[in-house]
Image (cartoon, rainbow, N blue to C red; front, side):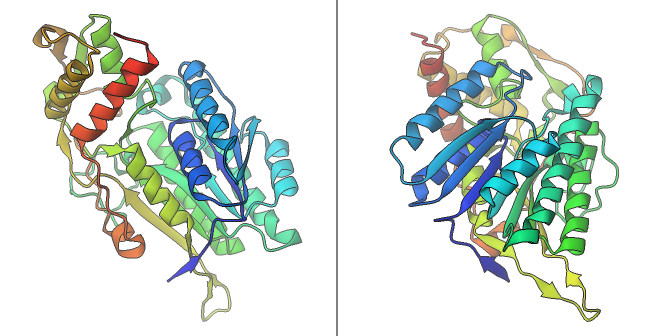
Amino acid sequence: MKTPINLNNKNILVTGSPGFIGANLVLRLLKDMDSGLIVSLDNMNDYYDPALKEYRKGLIEAAASSTRARHIFVQGSIADKALVDSLFEQYRFDVVVNLAAQAGVRYSIDHPDVYIESNLIGFYNILEACRHSYDHGAGVAHLVYASSSSVYGGNKKVPFSTDDKVDNPVSLYAATKKSNELLAHSYSKLYNIPSTGLRFFTVYGPAGRPDMFYYSATQKLVKGETIKIFNYGNMKRDFTYVDDIVEGIIRVMQGAPERKTGEDGLPIPPYALYNIGGGQPENLLDYVSTLQEELVRAGVLPADYDFEAHRELVGMQPGDVPVTYADSRGLEENYGFVPKIGIREGLRKFAEWYKEYNKLG
């Protein structure tokens, strides 16, 4: 059973906005909500070009100027405990969506410090603020947080299920995300905090993260550089278009795990964990071919572009896995969520956005 939450007239915190998923979530909330307040919190770091975050922030500000719900942007880090506590005290959040995190498997190999700071200390600060939100009122009705398909590591059983054992991460990033799930469970048990974790599977779309393969490959092709296709193309990814991800998050926000008391008189953890993915793994070479076709169609690349001359098949890289495949039946059963956008449609939207954003043609 889920406890229904009407998002109208609620105070909602979205950390990691104007990041990629966070910005799209806030835009959707502004579109759907008739009243209430959305607070975006992000440190606007330079992990990738900050201009892209400024662009998304501009989209949010433009949307907020003509909506009934209010939006406030706060620049700062979830690792700043004093800031997090002050925001919770000032705005008394009803729903919290924690998307702020240092992302990227490969980056974690050489920059472990930022992952510990944001993904562990930062998430701990969010959990503590949720815990103390009950000291002076109803408190947080639902904490939704981002996990990752990376927790499955080299799992050979497909599709990946949230019932699978995930105790052998192959990257520090994956280890921090698994840690988030464990911390959230313990806080749900100890302090009766309704929390739902979402394991995202390879999210893509317009204004996405430039470090993601489809975006970085496009940038290299435009410059006439060669793209590396890892594991000689023997990779499968459960690509998920960002609008599908947002739809899933919105539905989950509106249904919190039910608070119950066990036979021992203690709370049964109001805790849930779901995969959120396309449910249709795509071969990486097919994905690349579709991307190239859509870049030509949009006019980002010329029709006579020699793709074969700009491809290099290389071996596996550290921290990566050969396949990701989401078993998302839990989301379908509990929230009626089924992803609808395939890679052709999704990559077409990205290619058209890329042309417009970069003023090509």
